[in-house]
Image (cartoon, rainbow, N blue to C red; front, side, top):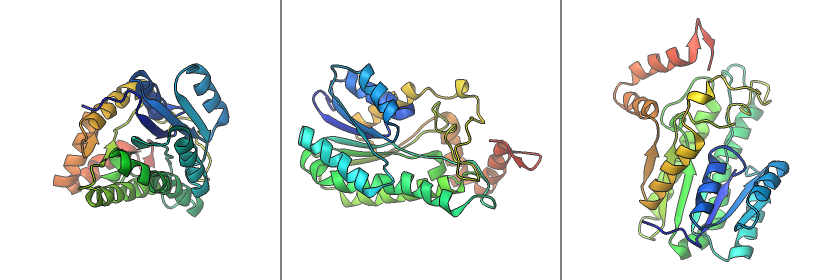
Length: 268
C-alpha cells in the first residue's frame, strides 16, 4: 500500500463532484494537493474551506494547452515533484447526434481527451522521476457508446485507448497507469452537460439521490490507486453493461436503448 503522507497529488477539476471528493480524501491522508478548475469562485470556496491545509488551487481550463502548462508549472514551482496525477476534469452532453453541433463535439473532445493529454504530457517527466501514477477518470461510455452522448462516448473511448497505449509504453518505468470508469455517480456533471445548442442543460435527468455518492466513488478510486490497479469499473449496473456489451452486443443495444428512450424519445 502507498502512504500518501507528504506526497504531491495533482487533481484536475477538483472544485466539485468526484474531483472535490478526491481533494478532500487525499488531504485527509496527509497529501499535498494541487487542483485546478474553471470557476474561480468555487476554487476560492474550496481553498477557504481548507484553510491551513496543504492545498494549492489554480484557475485553468484543461481544454486550453497553455492553461495546462501553467497549472503543472505552478505545481512544480511550489512542490518540485508530482507523485500522482488524476485527470478528473470532464464535460458531458445530452443530445442526439442529428441535432448536436460540431462545436459541442469539439468541446467534449478538447476537455475530456485533450485535457488529460496536455496535463499528462507536462507532468510526465516529474512522474517518471517519482515513479508515481497517472490516473484518468473515464466512464462506462468509454466501453459502451451511449445514445444522446455520442461526443462524450467518443472522448471517453479515445481516453481509454490512449491510457492503455501509454500504460504499455511505461510498463517498465515504475509508473502505474490506471483508468477509472464510474457508473452513474452523484455529481454536477449532468446539470452542466451540454444540450444540442452547446449550453448547459441546467438539470439532471436522473434521480441524483439514488446514485453512488461522490465520496464513496473517491474511496474506491483511492483503494485502486493504492493497489496500482490497471482499470476500475464501478457500480453493478456499470459492470453488467460492460460485460453484456462484450459478450452479447446486440442484446446490449436493445437494453441500452430501452434505458435511455421512451416512446422513441430520449429521456435520460
